[in-house]
Image (cartoon, rainbow, N blue to C red; front, top):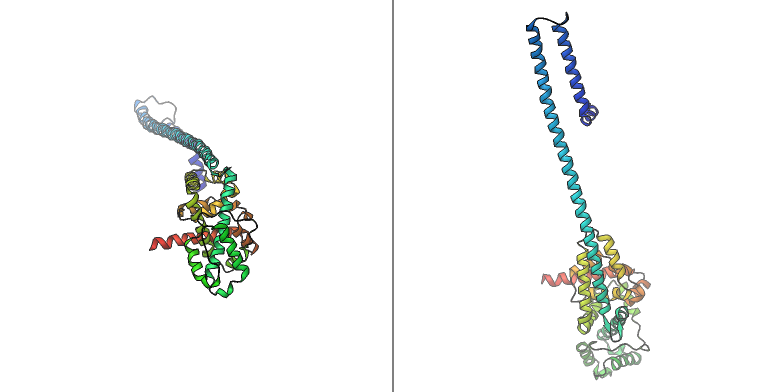
Amino acid sequence: MKKVYKYFGKHPLLICAIVVFTICLIMFILYITKFNNGLSSESDKWSAFGCYFSSITGFLAFGAVLYTSHLSELRAEDAERKNREQEIDAENRSRIDNERTIFFQLLGLHTKKVDSVVFKDDRASEAFKSYYAKASDYLSIYILIKELINIKDTEDINDELRGGYKKLFSTHFPKCKFDYSVKNFDDFKKKVKSELLYDCIYMPKNFAFNIQPIISRKVQEEDFSYLYEVIKFVADIMYKEYGHILGHYFRNMYYVMDTINNFSDQKNYKELFRAQLSRYELALGVFNAVSSRSGIKMVELLEDFAVFKDLYEEDMKILKFAKEGGVEPSILIKNILNEYKKDVSKKSDK
């Protein structure tokens, strides 16, 4: 029965034809009833038949008016629907065109910001490479200093270790006069804490200090808070020295990602933007993500854009050593970013 209703619902003209046929049949039967002996000459019979006929035709005329009105409404609704669809389609095309225009304007702005980054004689991608090299040196030095500060027993400081520290500080902190003798070791540690890293020069290539055992140990212990702390410390040092250059770049990067995040076609534009970032922009981005100048929204955008997906683990010692220890770089970065979120949350609760 439902199928029958559905069929007739789609074919209203068929219903009308059936109704008209039925009415004609009734009229024919009435005609036979009234004039079974041929055409009557009696006016009363013609009058009675006329009454029947006028009632039926009047009803049909009224039905025809209603049907015509209904068809007009359907046509108007269909025209309105098509107009609305055309308007929506035009709005969508306009929005897509606007987003495409805005994206490439943002991309042009980002390229200009990259080109404006300088380090001595290096520009653009080479400057990022130099900045990252400096951050990497700072990281090694700071990890070395933390190991020094954590030494409890002065007997653990052998001549080789003491010689390494002496070479480190005489190279990087020529203005600081440290006493490397064991008897003054506690005073030495206090001074180290107060004069860490600032205005440090590059680590010489012949300086033999391998942080791999320390990183591997921390990764195995899942001490991600340690790794977060050392990266954050170096990031803040870099910002203190070069924030007027790098800070501007990363603020623009945040603005670009935040704008793209409101696009209707986010996925493609996110991938296109991520493809523009060089390997050293990504490496420095890890430092910036957990710096004191960063924020939860910045970290969420970096995760949402999967910015660090294309990061070369060979470009970051921590990632390289972690992978050699069996921990994927993506997992390590995720844990470091989580440590940042926990740190921010802890501070906001105070």
